[in-house]
Length: 151
Image 1 (cartoon, one colour):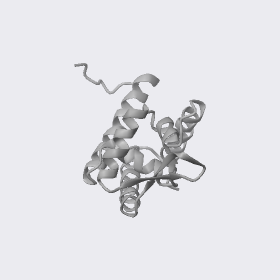
Image 2 (cartoon, rainbow, N blue to C red):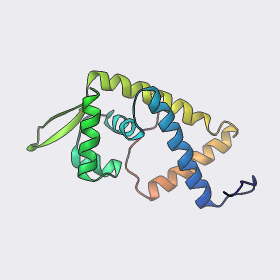
Image 3 (cartoon, rainbow, N blue to C red):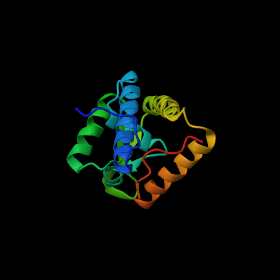
C-alpha cells in the first residue's frame, strides 16, 4: 500500500479520498441509529416529504429492485411507509413515519455536526472557498438534492 507523503494531492485523489471520508462519517453516524448508510440517505432524502419510487431511484442512484429492497428493510424498522400516490393510483410514494421523521432529524443533525468538523483546520475564508468550489462541482454535474443545506 502506498504511503501518504503529506504532499499536494491531485483533484482526483482529493475528491475520491474526500468521498471516502464523508462516507465514513455517514456510516459511523448511521451505526448509532441502527441504520446502514443507504438507509440514512433514504431518510434524509425523504425529510422534505414523500417521494415516488422513480424519483427516489434517480436521487439515490439505485435500480428498482435495489430500491425496493432498501424501502422494505427500512419499512421493517418502522421508519418509512408506502402510501398511495394521489396523482397515480397505480403508483406508490414512500414517506417517513412519525418515528422515522424523529430518527431522520437526529441522524441528519449528527451527520451535519460531524461533517462540519472535517474541515476544522481551515479558516473561515478557506471554508467558504471550499464550499463554493465543491458547490460548483455538484451543480455542474447536476447531482440530485440528496442532502439539503442545514443552514
